[in-house]
Image (cartoon, rainbow, N blue to C red; front, side):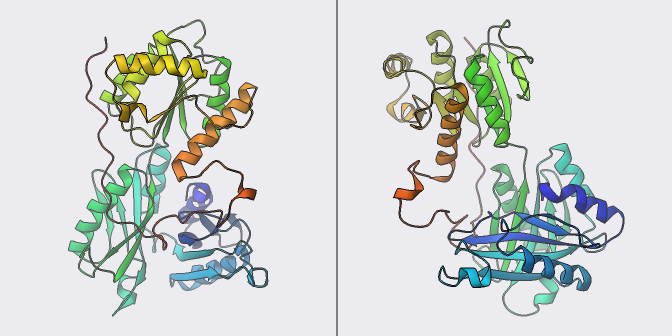
Length: 398
């Protein structure tokens, strides 16, 4: 919803009903992932996208209808590869799209949600998008907004609200969007109610160690990918905001000391990526000693094969286990034949993306099977989630 937030809030504050379409499930080669949104205003203005163009026309018309009627609708768009062009979903995938009306009556909590998203406060919206069994009208479209310290709205049952609140906070802790299933009274083994949970957590962090030209390129592509980027180096003459204008923050500190302090402060999580570009043992070995003992999404280090072998010897001498060392991507990046800092940054970003989504890094033209992976277990569903392991506390800096 971030990409349609401004227009949607403008219509909401003006008291004008809008239609909001959200992808809540995908299969096969679906063009957009769960959580993608498209909003249609009272004047027919459209913002956002749910399919990259494949079924936008059909969803647009449905959103206008729902904005007028106020009746929420879950619609599936999907065809086989053979008749894809005739129907419109040319990728051959399948989308479940939930369409609802947004105004001050249908979504009274929207103003608080919009304010929290803009403030970077972790927020989740759980909406009942499917009801199987009796009395669907009483539950369909009910909504629960969840923050870390409070909730707003209701799914229609106190026990369901309590169960969903716990599970949604688990999803929010790891920044995960998906579907939760329950019985009418909140039974977690039930399948009568499907709740789509859209999470709006703070952006994941990318920490780049080493104030070199490669770091500037990595910072730029990290921002492009949606990370909150920090560049850190112990040398103040090189570590300046002027040299790294795209980074969200530039920190002068010893890398290992900074990373340890961020972990102890709880500012790292299982989505954090660390790129060690210092290329100097006095910097990179101590920071890797810290990073490889944290439950981070990615830890990569720049260097030649010879540097890598020497680095492993030093890390083993520092007490790291083979399992911890196996988490290190070194030399970091994919084999793209990169030469320039910008090309190297693309190589590093490609490896991070591949690690995140389970890609092989091979050329698509030589692979068989579908291009896009399902967003969850085949129908967009996820089970109750457990928050990422805590990062810290750690021993005091040396």
